[in-house]
View 1: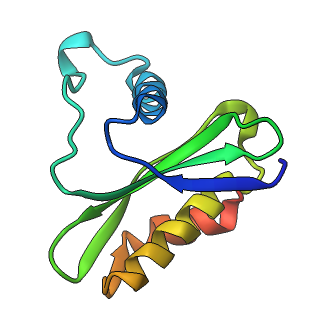
View 2: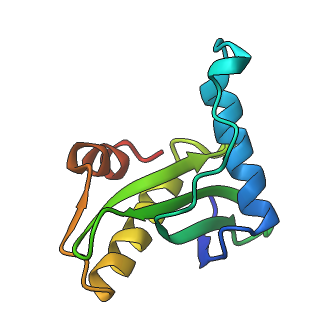
Length: 123
């Protein structure tokens, strides 16, 4: 993967909405339509990021942080387009999310096993 640029964007960003739709489509395969979530839950998302491939400007992934309380958050909505997987995109997004959390006084970011997997797998 080329060098990335990770940008903070509003939850309503159309590119972010498209990436979240792609994530839902992958997750919903094989589920009955009535079991699929119908809303995009943004109530406690503190920050939402999109990773762009620097050379082309194409979006390749996204991720967000969901606040649990004043000092804890969970990494949420991590998604990388299939062609860009295993190239470090998820790790770059996760690192930016962790950096944002530290800068905003969030003491604990979890789920820790998921954070460790994301940074280790080079998704």
